[in-house]
Length: 445
Image 1 (cartoon, rainbow, N blue to C red):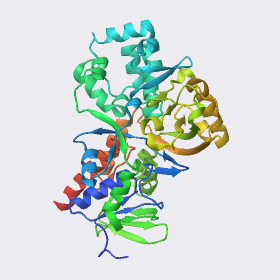
Image 2 (spheres, one colour; image 1 turned 60 degrees about the vertical axis):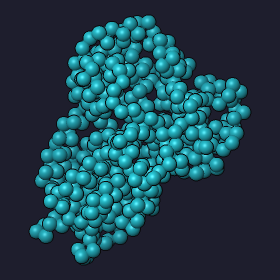
Image 3 (cartoon, rainbow, N blue to C red; image 1 turned 90 degrees about the vertical axis):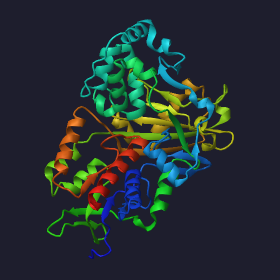
C-alpha cells in the first residue's frame, strides 16, 4: 500500500453519479479515481443492442433543459442529442379499459365533477406542506377523481411508487416550489414559467453519456474493483479502501456514489447511526419487459405516442407501457415495433419475481385489447431491477438532514446518487456536480 500514487479522491461506484463527480473533480484539478464493481461503467444507464432492437436497461430518455448541469456536460462531451418523433407527443392514461389521450380527453378521464372541482381549485390559495404525502395534498386540493385517475398515473410513471407514501416536497420539489409561488396547483401545471424542458435521448442511446464520461476519465475508471470495506482516517488523514481482490487503496476523501443501501453497508461498522439512516431508504422493485412485434400484429397501425400509464384503480398487470419505436424509430428493425412494459413497483413488488414466461404473457395479455394486437411477440427481454427506484417517502427530508448531520463528523466523506435529491438523469448529474464542486473547494482551500 502506497500513498504516493493514491488519488486525492476515491469515488466508489461507476454509475452516472460517480462518473460525473469524478469528471468534475478532475476538470477542477483534483485527482480522482472511480472504483466500479462490475465490468462496465454507467450503472442503470445501459443501452443493449439485441436482434436489431436498441433496448434501454434503465431510463428511456431524459428531460433536456438549456443551461442545466446535464446540458453543460452534453456540450463538453460533444454528444449528439436525439429528439423524439413528432408522433410521440401523445400520452395516454388507462381508464375503464380504454386509452385516453391527454390532454385532449382529459374531460373523459376526470368526468364533470372532477373537472368542476379542478376548475374551482384555481380560485383558491394552495397551502403547501412539503412534508405531507403527494396523495393527501392533491386529494385535498383537486378531489378524489384527479387523485385516483390522473395523479396516481403520473406518480406511477415517474416513481413506480405509492402516492400515499411519497413526500410531496422531496418527490416533486420543482412542482412544490411552483405551487408555493403561484398559490394554485393548476397554475403551477399550466402557467408556464421556468426553463423549457424537452424529452430527448442520444444518437446511440442513453449509454452514450456514461460511455463518453468514462472515455473522458480514461484509466481513472477502474472496472471490476469492488470496494469491500472502508477504514476512516486516523492520524494520517487518509481513508483506506480495500477491494475484493484484497488490495488496499488510500485517499484523502471518499465519495460514495452507490445506492444508499450499499453506502450504509460500507459505513455501518464505523458509524452505525449513519449506516442505519442509509439502510432505511425504501425502494420500488421493478421489472421491465420489452416486447418486439411485427408491424402486421397491429391491423390498425402500430401505436403512436410516448406510451400509457395505468392508475392503480384499473387493476392492470402493468404499471404502464412505453412505445420506444414511436419515440425513436431506430430502436426497432424495419417493419417491427418495440413496446416496453413496467411491472411491479412499490405496491406490487411480488410481480417482479414471476418467471420470464409469466411476465411476458401477462404483459402481452394486458396490451392486446388496448393496442389491438392480433399476434404474439416475436422476441422479448425481461430485466429485473430488484433494488429498483429509491422512494422519497414520508420523512425523507428529515432523514436527509440527519444524514447530513452525521456527515459533518466525517469531513472527507460525501454521498451522491439517486437515493438523495432526485432520481432523474438531470437530477443525478446536477447533484454529482454539486458534490464535486463543494469537495474540490474544500480540498484546494
